[in-house]
Image (tube, rainbow, N blue to C red; front, side):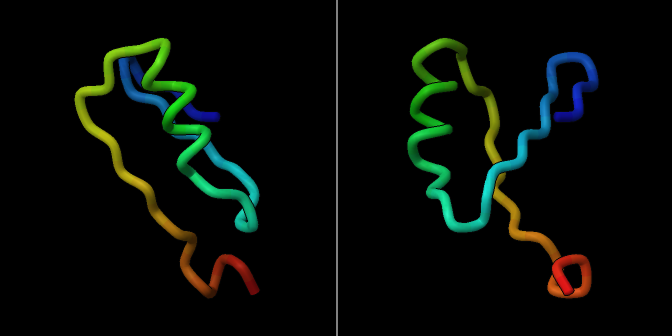
Length: 45
């Protein structure tokens, strides 16, 4: 996890869905902006 002020970057297993993670976070915090990014293929290989 990376944190810069109010911003946080989270990672999770590729075979997992982002939905439960986002739901859990949204139930505890106000989310102003959200981005879900997949890694570059070069970083995976």
